[in-house]
Amino acid sequence: MSQESSAASARSFTVSGEIFSMPNLDIYAQMTYIVLSSGASDSLSLSVPDMARKGRMTIKQVIKAMQDLTEQKLISHKVFRHLIGEFQDDRLSWSAKGLLTYCKEHPSTSVDELIALSDQSDENESTIRKALLELKHAGYLEDYPELRQIAT
Image (tube, rainbow, N blue to C red):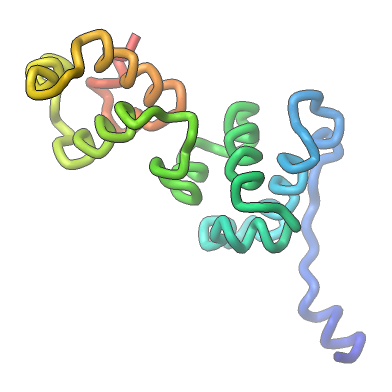
């Protein structure tokens, strides 16, 4: 490969130096941020395995790093959800994941309806509310305004 074609295929991007001085970010979060920034125009088309390969990390390290970046508000919950998906998000209990799946299929559901449905399982109102809080904290209730308001 000649230097000309190498230079033509190289992209230029800028990463703020602040990323290196943030005390709550480890090297994996920093590298994940750099990988995402290097492909900023097509970051939503990146896959977790691609990021792991480019950042020389495991998939688990990338997921944890993206969780940290989301917590620090360096990437949005929407980007995180798109790239990771709720079933790989280990911040969520299986109760929260199941509740989210139900809410996706029934977007106009109410908490009263969820509590009534809990009678069909071992879950109770406390478990439902705890799962709603998990979903709210992890940014999954952005598309469900009624549930977001009552998940307190």
